[in-house]
Image (cartoon, rainbow, N blue to C red; front, side, top):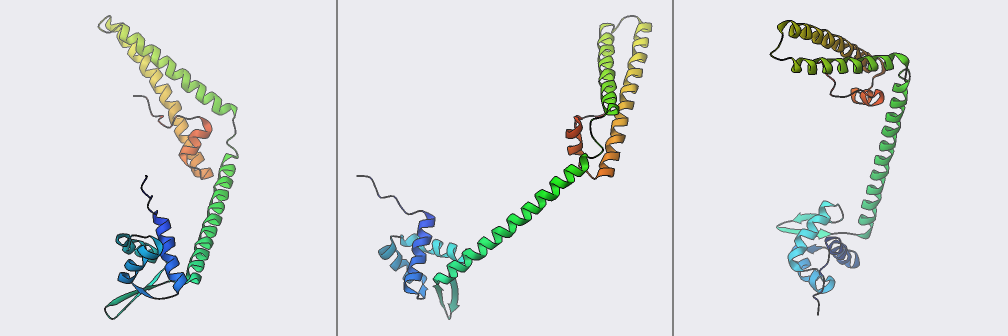
Length: 205
């Protein structure tokens, strides 16, 4: 025969509230530890933690009179707490909706004037071509390592020219990005994504 499954935390909290709401009385912890197992099946060892949790949730009131601590709760207390929580969640939802709309409006505004255009395509194309040429020259240099000094010098000069050209285009991209960020108040990350710019783009060394 299987053992009876114990109550969950939420079930224990519900049972403890029933003690207060059914009796409409005040209790000390020791009294609750005796009543809860008999009336509601809540083990005495867990009563203290459950009561404290209900106090933290604002569902049970407590006060110290002399050296004794008393606990109480009325049905209206629970209802008002739930109504306050519901109102709080509604306000949070409204704030989230406002922030979402403001963000959407900002994104749409930032897109104005940054549509796909020929200038952008040309810059990216020339940058890509410059990188390709640079890689070809570097591959050629590796083939001639330790050979004709004149050829090596020429290849180094051509490589430097290609590198300088590529870096100029990279510099142009950085300048345009900086202008767009300041002009349209958009985050750099969104700008990179919108125009297909590699976020790790950097000068070639």
